[in-house]
Amino acid sequence: MYFVNQVVLLKVHLANIIYPKPVYSMSPLRRLSLSVVFALLFGLSANAQSAKDSVYLYFPAISSGKEGQVINIPVKVRGFSGLISAQFIVQWDSTRVQYLGVDSFGIASISESAHFGYNLSNPDRVRFVWFEPDIKPQSINDGGTIFNLKMKLIGKKDESCNIAFVQDGTTIFEFLDKDGNEVKYGFGNGEIKISGSTSSAQSGQDTGFFGKPFPNPFSDETFIQLNLPENQEIKLEIFDISGKKVYSDLAYYGFGTQFVHIKKNNIPSEGIYFYQLSNSRGSSVSGKIINRQ
Image (tube, rainbow, N blue to C red; front, side, top):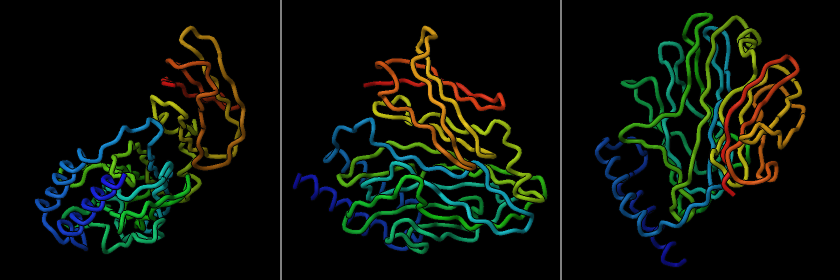
Protein backbone atom coordinates (compact mmCIF):
# COMPACT_ATOMS: atom_id res chain seq x y z
CA MET A 1 0.00 0.00 0.00
CA TYR A 2 2.92 2.34 0.76
CA PHE A 3 4.30 1.76 -2.73
CA VAL A 4 0.94 2.50 -4.33
CA ASN A 5 0.62 5.77 -2.40
CA GLN A 6 4.09 6.86 -3.46
CA VAL A 7 3.24 6.20 -7.11
CA VAL A 8 0.08 8.26 -6.83
CA LEU A 9 1.99 11.10 -5.16
CA LEU A 10 4.50 10.96 -8.01
CA LYS A 11 1.66 11.28 -10.51
CA VAL A 12 0.32 14.36 -8.78
CA HIS A 13 3.75 15.98 -8.53
CA LEU A 14 4.33 15.34 -12.23
CA ALA A 15 0.93 16.84 -12.96
CA ASN A 16 1.99 20.01 -11.15
CA ILE A 17 5.23 20.13 -13.15
CA ILE A 18 3.88 19.21 -16.59
CA TYR A 19 0.46 20.77 -16.11
CA PRO A 20 1.07 24.12 -14.35
CA LYS A 21 -1.83 26.30 -13.24
CA PRO A 22 -3.77 27.72 -14.89
CA VAL A 23 -3.99 24.44 -16.81
CA TYR A 24 -4.85 26.00 -20.16
CA SER A 25 -1.86 28.32 -20.37
CA MET A 26 0.12 25.49 -21.95
CA SER A 27 0.18 24.11 -25.48
CA PRO A 28 -1.84 21.07 -26.64
CA LEU A 29 1.44 19.15 -27.06
CA ARG A 30 2.37 19.64 -23.40
CA ARG A 31 -1.14 18.68 -22.31
CA LEU A 32 -0.80 15.48 -24.35
CA SER A 33 2.58 14.75 -22.72
CA LEU A 34 0.87 14.57 -19.32
CA SER A 35 -1.50 11.89 -20.60
CA VAL A 36 1.47 9.89 -21.94
CA VAL A 37 3.32 10.04 -18.61
CA PHE A 38 0.18 9.07 -16.70
CA ALA A 39 -0.42 6.15 -19.07
CA LEU A 40 3.08 4.81 -18.30
CA LEU A 41 2.67 5.24 -14.57
CA PHE A 42 -0.78 3.64 -14.42
CA GLY A 43 0.89 0.29 -14.97
CA LEU A 44 2.73 0.65 -11.65
CA SER A 45 -0.38 0.94 -9.51
CA ALA A 46 -3.17 -0.70 -11.46
CA ASN A 47 -5.47 -2.82 -9.35
CA ALA A 48 -8.43 -4.98 -10.32
CA GLN A 49 -11.43 -2.71 -10.95
CA SER A 50 -14.78 -3.68 -9.44
CA ALA A 51 -17.81 -3.53 -11.74
CA LYS A 52 -19.61 -1.37 -9.19
CA ASP A 53 -16.89 1.34 -9.31
CA SER A 54 -18.45 3.79 -11.74
CA VAL A 55 -19.26 7.47 -11.95
CA TYR A 56 -22.14 8.95 -13.93
CA LEU A 57 -22.41 12.60 -15.00
CA TYR A 58 -25.58 14.07 -16.47
CA PHE A 59 -27.44 17.23 -17.40
CA PRO A 60 -31.12 17.89 -16.82
CA ALA A 61 -32.85 16.28 -19.81
CA ILE A 62 -34.14 19.70 -20.85
CA SER A 63 -32.86 23.16 -19.92
CA SER A 64 -34.95 25.99 -21.29
CA GLY A 65 -35.56 29.70 -21.25
CA LYS A 66 -36.57 32.68 -23.32
CA GLU A 67 -34.53 34.21 -26.11
CA GLY A 68 -31.76 36.37 -24.60
CA GLN A 69 -32.16 34.84 -21.11
CA VAL A 70 -29.20 33.69 -19.00
CA ILE A 71 -29.75 30.21 -17.52
CA ASN A 72 -27.79 27.93 -15.19
CA ILE A 73 -27.21 24.35 -16.35
CA PRO A 74 -25.94 22.06 -13.56
CA VAL A 75 -23.56 19.18 -14.20
CA LYS A 76 -24.95 16.49 -11.87
CA VAL A 77 -23.16 13.37 -10.63
CA ARG A 78 -23.83 9.91 -9.26
CA GLY A 79 -21.22 7.54 -7.88
CA PHE A 80 -18.68 10.37 -7.48
CA SER A 81 -16.94 8.88 -4.46
CA GLY A 82 -13.29 8.91 -3.39
CA LEU A 83 -11.93 10.51 -6.58
CA ILE A 84 -8.77 12.59 -6.97
CA SER A 85 -9.01 13.53 -10.64
CA ALA A 86 -11.55 14.07 -13.43
CA GLN A 87 -11.45 15.46 -16.94
CA PHE A 88 -13.90 15.87 -19.82
CA ILE A 89 -15.27 18.43 -22.30
CA VAL A 90 -18.77 19.93 -22.44
CA GLN A 91 -19.93 20.90 -25.95
CA TRP A 92 -22.95 22.83 -27.33
CA ASP A 93 -24.07 24.76 -30.43
CA SER A 94 -22.41 28.18 -30.14
CA THR A 95 -24.81 29.72 -32.67
CA ARG A 96 -27.65 29.21 -30.17
CA VAL A 97 -25.96 29.26 -26.77
CA GLN A 98 -23.19 31.54 -25.46
CA TYR A 99 -20.86 30.46 -22.64
CA LEU A 100 -20.55 32.99 -19.81
CA GLY A 101 -18.67 31.02 -17.15
CA VAL A 102 -18.98 28.46 -14.34
CA ASP A 103 -19.82 28.59 -10.63
CA SER A 104 -21.33 26.59 -7.71
CA PHE A 105 -18.45 24.12 -7.43
CA GLY A 106 -19.16 20.87 -5.62
CA ILE A 107 -15.51 20.47 -4.53
CA ALA A 108 -13.72 23.21 -2.59
CA SER A 109 -10.45 22.97 -4.55
CA ILE A 110 -12.10 23.55 -7.96
CA SER A 111 -11.76 27.04 -9.42
CA GLU A 112 -12.66 28.55 -12.77
CA SER A 113 -9.17 29.93 -13.44
CA ALA A 114 -7.27 26.71 -12.65
CA HIS A 115 -9.49 23.91 -13.93
CA PHE A 116 -11.53 25.21 -16.87
CA GLY A 117 -10.37 26.08 -20.36
CA TYR A 118 -12.41 28.19 -22.76
CA ASN A 119 -11.12 29.73 -25.98
CA LEU A 120 -12.98 32.06 -28.33
CA SER A 121 -11.47 30.16 -31.25
CA ASN A 122 -13.57 27.18 -30.09
CA PRO A 123 -16.67 28.87 -28.62
CA ASP A 124 -18.71 25.65 -28.60
CA ARG A 125 -16.92 23.90 -25.72
CA VAL A 126 -15.28 24.21 -22.32
CA ARG A 127 -12.66 21.82 -20.96
CA PHE A 128 -12.61 20.62 -17.36
CA VAL A 129 -9.37 19.13 -15.96
CA TRP A 130 -9.11 18.71 -12.19
CA PHE A 131 -6.41 17.15 -9.98
CA GLU A 132 -6.97 17.20 -6.23
CA PRO A 133 -3.98 18.61 -4.27
CA ASP A 134 -2.19 16.05 -2.05
CA ILE A 135 -4.43 13.29 -3.52
CA LYS A 136 -7.08 13.80 -0.85
CA PRO A 137 -10.12 11.80 -2.10
CA GLN A 138 -13.22 13.88 -2.80
CA SER A 139 -16.89 12.82 -2.92
CA ILE A 140 -20.16 14.43 -3.99
CA ASN A 141 -23.55 13.11 -2.91
CA ASP A 142 -25.65 11.39 -5.57
CA GLY A 143 -27.68 14.03 -7.38
CA GLY A 144 -25.21 16.73 -6.34
CA THR A 145 -23.65 19.29 -8.67
CA ILE A 146 -19.95 19.37 -9.55
CA PHE A 147 -20.38 22.77 -11.24
CA ASN A 148 -22.95 25.02 -12.96
CA LEU A 149 -22.64 26.35 -16.49
CA LYS A 150 -23.84 29.93 -16.99
CA MET A 151 -25.23 30.15 -20.54
CA LYS A 152 -26.97 32.88 -22.52
CA LEU A 153 -29.63 31.80 -25.03
CA ILE A 154 -28.73 33.68 -28.23
CA GLY A 155 -30.73 31.58 -30.71
CA LYS A 156 -34.25 32.24 -31.90
CA LYS A 157 -37.52 31.09 -30.38
CA ASP A 158 -38.29 27.38 -30.86
CA GLU A 159 -34.66 26.56 -31.66
CA SER A 160 -32.84 23.92 -29.64
CA CYS A 161 -29.47 22.20 -29.41
CA ASN A 162 -27.81 19.36 -27.57
CA ILE A 163 -25.39 19.82 -24.69
CA ALA A 164 -23.07 16.84 -24.40
CA PHE A 165 -19.98 15.37 -22.78
CA VAL A 166 -17.23 14.79 -25.37
CA GLN A 167 -13.48 14.21 -25.61
CA ASP A 168 -10.71 14.97 -28.10
CA GLY A 169 -7.00 14.33 -28.67
CA THR A 170 -5.84 16.50 -25.76
CA THR A 171 -8.64 16.03 -23.20
CA ILE A 172 -9.91 12.46 -22.90
CA PHE A 173 -12.55 11.09 -20.53
CA GLU A 174 -10.77 10.14 -17.33
CA PHE A 175 -11.68 9.65 -13.66
CA LEU A 176 -9.16 8.41 -11.07
CA ASP A 177 -9.63 7.01 -7.58
CA LYS A 178 -7.29 7.56 -4.61
CA ASP A 179 -4.96 4.78 -5.79
CA GLY A 180 -4.66 6.19 -9.30
CA ASN A 181 -6.92 3.57 -10.85
CA GLU A 182 -9.19 4.59 -13.70
CA VAL A 183 -12.88 4.51 -12.72
CA LYS A 184 -15.60 3.46 -15.14
CA TYR A 185 -17.87 6.25 -16.30
CA GLY A 186 -21.08 7.07 -18.14
CA PHE A 187 -22.86 10.20 -19.29
CA GLY A 188 -26.38 11.54 -19.75
CA ASN A 189 -26.49 14.34 -22.31
CA GLY A 190 -29.17 17.01 -22.35
CA GLU A 191 -31.02 19.47 -24.56
CA ILE A 192 -31.29 23.26 -24.47
CA LYS A 193 -34.52 24.79 -25.77
CA ILE A 194 -35.36 28.41 -26.52
CA SER A 195 -39.03 29.21 -26.24
CA GLY A 196 -41.65 31.66 -25.08
CA SER A 197 -41.88 29.90 -21.69
CA THR A 198 -40.13 27.15 -19.79
CA SER A 199 -43.31 25.09 -19.46
CA SER A 200 -43.93 24.97 -23.21
CA ALA A 201 -40.40 23.72 -23.80
CA GLN A 202 -40.71 20.94 -21.28
CA SER A 203 -44.06 19.76 -22.60
CA GLY A 204 -42.29 18.41 -25.68
CA GLN A 205 -41.18 15.35 -23.74
CA ASP A 206 -44.18 13.11 -24.35
CA THR A 207 -43.01 9.89 -22.78
CA GLY A 208 -40.94 11.40 -20.00
CA PHE A 209 -38.27 8.69 -20.37
CA PHE A 210 -34.65 9.52 -20.98
CA GLY A 211 -31.38 7.62 -21.00
CA LYS A 212 -30.30 4.00 -20.88
CA PRO A 213 -29.42 1.71 -17.96
CA PHE A 214 -26.02 2.49 -16.44
CA PRO A 215 -23.90 0.60 -15.70
CA ASN A 216 -24.87 -2.23 -18.03
CA PRO A 217 -23.76 -5.01 -17.56
CA PHE A 218 -23.95 -4.58 -13.77
CA SER A 219 -23.17 -6.61 -10.66
CA ASP A 220 -24.82 -4.70 -7.78
CA GLU A 221 -27.28 -2.22 -9.28
CA THR A 222 -28.08 -0.22 -12.39
CA PHE A 223 -30.28 2.82 -12.86
CA ILE A 224 -32.27 4.53 -15.61
CA GLN A 225 -32.53 8.31 -15.82
CA LEU A 226 -36.02 9.74 -16.29
CA ASN A 227 -37.17 13.20 -17.29
CA LEU A 228 -40.76 13.65 -16.16
CA PRO A 229 -42.91 16.59 -17.34
CA GLU A 230 -45.13 16.13 -14.28
CA ASN A 231 -45.48 14.06 -11.09
CA GLN A 232 -46.60 10.53 -11.96
CA GLU A 233 -46.53 6.84 -11.11
CA ILE A 234 -44.03 4.69 -13.00
CA LYS A 235 -44.33 0.91 -13.26
CA LEU A 236 -41.18 -1.19 -13.61
CA GLU A 237 -41.44 -4.77 -14.91
CA ILE A 238 -38.54 -7.17 -15.50
CA PHE A 239 -38.76 -10.33 -17.63
CA ASP A 240 -36.36 -13.21 -18.21
CA ILE A 241 -35.45 -14.43 -21.71
CA SER A 242 -38.45 -16.80 -21.76
CA GLY A 243 -40.83 -13.86 -21.23
CA LYS A 244 -41.65 -14.75 -17.61
CA LYS A 245 -42.11 -11.75 -15.34
CA VAL A 246 -39.62 -11.95 -12.46
CA TYR A 247 -40.10 -8.55 -10.83
CA SER A 248 -42.64 -5.73 -10.75
CA ASP A 249 -42.76 -2.42 -8.87
CA LEU A 250 -45.00 0.65 -8.94
CA ALA A 251 -43.56 3.87 -7.50
CA TYR A 252 -44.38 7.58 -7.47
CA TYR A 253 -41.82 9.98 -8.98
CA GLY A 254 -41.78 13.76 -8.89
CA PHE A 255 -41.38 16.24 -11.71
CA GLY A 256 -37.95 16.60 -13.38
CA THR A 257 -34.90 14.35 -13.45
CA GLN A 258 -35.36 11.12 -11.48
CA PHE A 259 -33.78 7.65 -11.38
CA VAL A 260 -35.26 4.15 -11.40
CA HIS A 261 -33.00 1.68 -9.57
CA ILE A 262 -32.72 -1.99 -10.48
CA LYS A 263 -30.83 -4.01 -7.86
CA LYS A 264 -29.34 -7.49 -8.14
CA ASN A 265 -31.82 -8.83 -5.57
CA ASN A 266 -34.68 -7.77 -7.89
CA ILE A 267 -33.77 -10.62 -10.23
CA PRO A 268 -33.25 -14.33 -9.43
CA SER A 269 -29.83 -14.94 -10.98
CA GLU A 270 -27.24 -13.59 -13.37
CA GLY A 271 -28.04 -13.43 -17.07
CA ILE A 272 -29.92 -11.38 -19.65
CA TYR A 273 -33.21 -9.72 -18.70
CA PHE A 274 -35.61 -7.27 -20.31
CA TYR A 275 -37.24 -4.33 -18.55
CA GLN A 276 -40.26 -2.18 -19.30
CA LEU A 277 -41.15 1.19 -17.79
CA SER A 278 -44.68 2.51 -18.26
CA ASN A 279 -46.94 5.25 -16.92
CA SER A 280 -50.69 5.74 -16.60
CA ARG A 281 -50.87 7.65 -19.89
CA GLY A 282 -49.89 4.54 -21.84
CA SER A 283 -46.33 5.64 -22.63
CA SER A 284 -43.64 3.02 -22.20
CA VAL A 285 -40.02 2.25 -22.91
CA SER A 286 -38.16 -1.05 -22.80
CA GLY A 287 -34.65 -2.40 -23.06
CA LYS A 288 -32.15 -5.08 -22.09
CA ILE A 289 -30.04 -5.40 -18.95
CA ILE A 290 -27.29 -7.90 -18.17
CA ASN A 291 -26.60 -9.01 -14.61
CA ARG A 292 -23.23 -10.49 -13.68
CA GLN A 293 -23.33 -11.54 -10.03
